[in-house]
Amino acid sequence: MIDSKLDQRPVRRFDFSRMLATLLHPRQAFAELASGSRAVWLTPMLVLSLTAILAVVVAGYLNSRAALMGEISLPPDWQFWTPEMQNNYMRAQQATQGPVFTYVIPLVGALSALWLGWLVLAGLLHLGSTLLGGRGSMQSALNIVAWASLPFAIRDLLRIVFMLSAGHAIASPGLSGFAAGAGFLSQLLARTDVFLIWSAILLVIGFGAADGLPRSKALAGVIIVMLIVLLAQAGLGALGSGLGGVAVQRPFF
Image 1 (cartoon, rainbow, N blue to C red):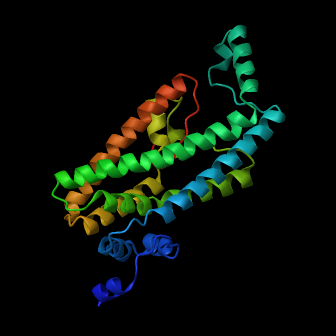
Image 2: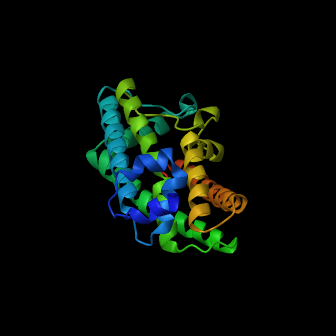
Image 3: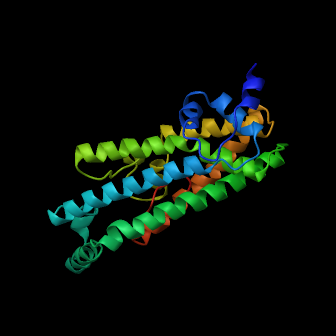
């Protein structure tokens, strides 16, 4: 009965009605995706791009307002800095309060991380699935990764609501509040939350349905790839923080 329904429903390039079904009934939704061969990743990627833009704009506005009011966050070891180091830090903060540093660079970084990270993650998961005996295609992997990332759009929306209600940007995303400083552990915890686990579960369901993998193999492939990606993210984030850069946290990279 289910197979006949899957055959009757066409797979559309833009399918916003599938979003709720993917989040609430993932097995049926990914079975429908597996029954088609078209590229249907555009809808979730557009939604993720939109929520990423909104999150960056809201955070940029709140940071700009805080800077105008003189509310500049200081490093935890500020009191041990020399007066020259403190002056250099304050000048650097003032130089990065323009719209280019507040909006343009974060927007470019967020969208680049989103789309490039999606391609890389889909490629790694497809490779892992193939090594484990999966028979899916790269096109299928792109579709699955895009739709399985919808929980991150919900995370962006919740963060936007929180920032607007609290009146300030989020200082410690994820579980980063349990680690001091901006080192490797803090960067790793910043990317770990319930939405990451939710997305990983959807990936397991999706690759199990599309590639014909047993649940154990699909779970192993997703966990290994996700750990590799998270460790690489944390390492790059810690390096960027050490160099004084701005880390852009997006679903993939």
